[in-house]
Image 1: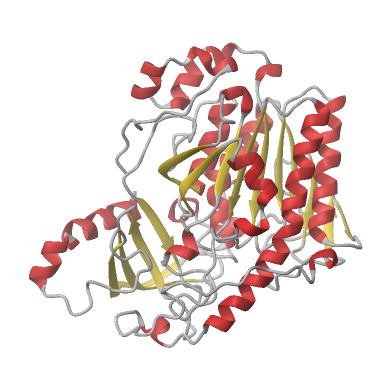
Image 2: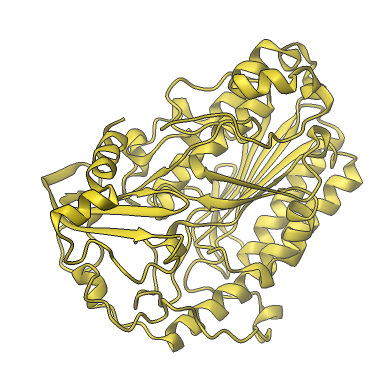
Length: 469
């Protein structure tokens, strides 16, 4: 995908000061950090890293996360166009770890977690560089609970559940009574506390189960009064004749969307409290200044948009996610907005750049600390199995102002192996500037001349190239 200098580079100070504004505008930040002062900096100058990944959290959830926004938004950077490249848990998390699209890392569905090459993950690179590495919460779907997550020296691995869940705690599988978000919080806080005596820089991967279904809130939040919501134009879309068959058959209503929204918001309240606890702990330890904190969801969720109340679809609420970071020592604490298209594949390159490590040659993403930009993003999804119903396999060209999607006669088995003819079975094109809710598929009934006018041949070619890159 094309990259070019961004008109408003992110400011950096501390050990990043050696990278000049001119150089940052003309070279990838990973190369700058490798060649510049960061490489020679002592280990103590490298930032700590706190990566928070929530589950199924769509963008319009600010009401439930005021503390998070107060820290990482008002005193950080908000990426207004944050996305995931596959709106499904295990593929998305594998992209976070690897910096690669799902078609490149091989975890195409939730059953294929074993396909991830663990030697090419950001946690492996950071561990090799001397970081103390910890995992607290959900890891990868279908990962056996008894198996240690590779390269994490300390972990509390959650078997996804909200109450009295099963965990693998540093190799011992056991049930821990209590609400899982609170347990994940407390285990992560204990990991942070060790920084008082362990001088190594650390990387904490913290990933609560919220706001995944069944969206159970902490008991203290069970009766929280959630603000009223009247939906959006896509909830429900009155005429879906221009949509693929599975969406034409979808039956979720505004009431359904309201119900899942309320449950998701209540479940996120405990996450917001945990984020505040992390902030306070870092302040207590004197490590708030030189800790890079990054917050993203593994995918979004629809609230009856187009009659659909799930994920895994190419519509904006399913793949657009909250994405924020803060790093005071690098000048990233000023409440700025970044309007670049940013994604989960950018997380690994960002963390490596912050640590002064060269990017992996196979990365599809780029560091968000530099000026690299993209004009569009590939978003992709594979259907698992051949059972009727649900979204087929699809791939989408997503830009700020337009989106082109193709559906295919393809499916995967549990290991992620792809079968099928690859034939295109349906197409959608939306002018997102004029139609942000994706109500009018401009390819419905379009003539070949109209398709050429819309630029569809070039978009189809670009999508085909992205899918095989």
